[in-house]
Image (cartoon, rainbow, N blue to C red):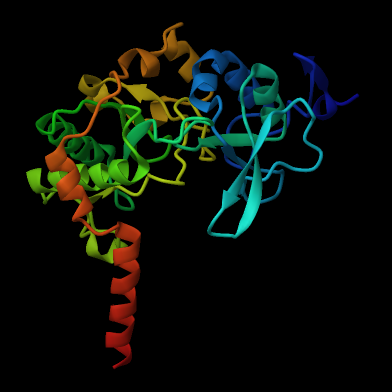
Length: 318
């Protein structure tokens, strides 16, 4: 049997083609992905457990694709849940990655990225407020770090605390755990308000402009990670050259790292048995009335951008 066809079994899951390249430019094999996810299972599974899961897979010679509906050949022991998707007007059968065996099965399917929902089954409220910091094309990481400092200050001024991780791409994600009485609309409003407050701290560094051409080379403070959105989980790999992972970073260490420091080959050693994401996460927090009042007065970014796009199109046509 050739190395490319090697079969290995872990926890009852048959793993195949482990020594094949994961994807073009990965500088990693499928085995590297499987070994990494298995090594961090006690770190990543708590982030995925009981959350409808979307994954990004990549088959040899094909472009990456997001999978929400589980395929027909999904084993019976993979837990699933059915969710009504309003946008597509259909039911979607999501997997729940609740155990090691399921995680290994996903890894064998070349599922590289893990994007859980913002809520757990049976808990109809968001667990976190999330700001996604997205730098302009070709920008350096130091610019994103400066923008993260603005968000941290805006949070502190609002009586809140969060923790930060690399996105696994070019940016950063800031998470604020929420009390169970915070609903989706209030969480979304508070996210918009925090982004606006951070922008006001230094509008030369960061922007809340949803339309790219309006950002002027600034870091985009994306406040749209709410409601039915997903976000890549802490410790999840990404489909990027070198297979970086979304990795927790202490606030005071942001100036000393780059997203490329954390990959499927390096991250386990850097953890050294600790779980910095869980250890640094503050306790769940409530939201103040003034923050909610400000946030509810701010238009939803996607809706405002859609209307502005239509207005600009009409202006060009005239």
